[in-house]
Image (cartoon, rainbow, N blue to C red):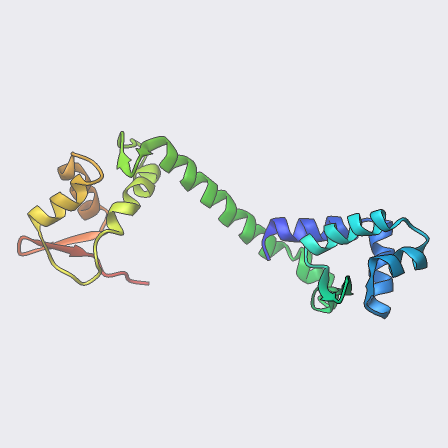
Length: 186
């Protein structure tokens, strides 16, 4: 569950009407009109809140003849609150999302139509921009220098600088005039 999913779920729970609806649905499945009658609310109000709860998977909907019958999602409701707000998981999710957005922004700034428009000077940004080039090579396969240059040239004309970066960073190895991706050691 992503950070946004957790926040949406907790926001959905932070409403008196939704809590009343969930309480009723935990006793038995029901359709909008029955819930409206039991809770003394307008069917449009019930529908509005059910839609919000359905968006964050608090309730499930199924069709029975002419009606949509709602039920509480016990998988989520039975989960301990500590699992929803566990800081380690939230921090990891938030960090991954920040990294994803950062990479996207870097790629948008330095690449257009799959080509590098300018090579970043910052090492971290270079590594991000050069990732798609590295992904063009197959692990374990040996490449002649002209093949490496040709692949790099599809992204940017300065194949020497990029190839040197790969070698210097230990991302690629040169063995007897042939190149291959460096084996990952963990």
